[in-house]
Image 1 (cartoon, one colour):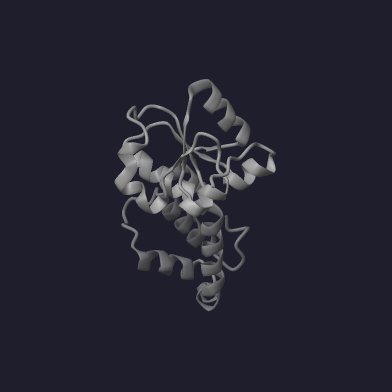
Image 2: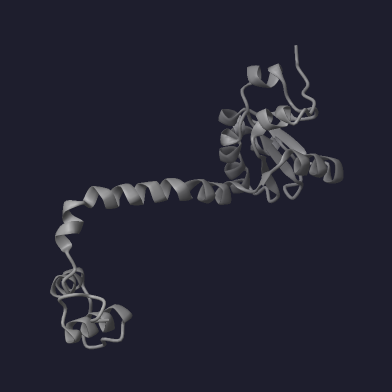
Length: 181
């Protein structure tokens, strides 16, 4: 390791690597010990303190990249319009549209129930008596549906999914919408 770290003696490099690997048993590492080792090994701590905003930006951007995956995992699987159609036809899935009534009236999937997201908490038991029955949650683009899916899972519904892309994706695929007058 000493060959790769210029200006650090072989003994210091070996001691630091044994501490990092956890094989240095005689010592409990505390944050100040780790800082001392970093300074004694020649790691430039000044660079980290002078450029803290770069590390903050990296952490924030990494979180922004990972957040959609975490949110999807919490809300449930996202179904394409083909998978949703197959689930509706094969297992008679219940479609729950969580858009506002005026959005629902302008065009909705045939057979869907309109339960606005802000009323979902009070009307959660009106969706389906069998909580193991498949449910597909729909909204305009999929954002509100993800929140509704998490609420339905918390209420005990087991097989809940979101229509990926919402009504916009359904309409872009050329699938029929029913308008209420």
